[in-house]
Length: 110
Image (cartoon, rainbow, N blue to C red; front, top):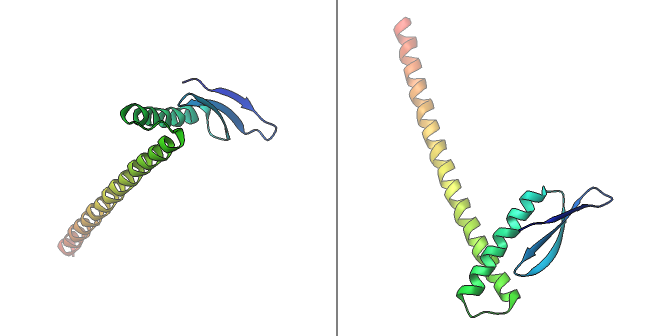
């Protein structure tokens, strides 16, 4: 997918992207490559839904794609929170181990 970039007076970018055969002009401060990558992802999700279902209404396809993407987001967020908690627990265990060893060392040199 190729996007066309224009700068407006307030220096925000206008990027044209194609999603499900329609061209949209998106405005913002993000890098064009990033916006194009996101638009391409949405386009792929919507095309997969339209290909694998009998839905022809693009607004229904967009809603289903949004729900699928939100589901991915929430699952990823939950997974990352779980990993963060696990890492915090491991760090606390290591800190306790180091503190215990340090106390043993202090007792040894006294």
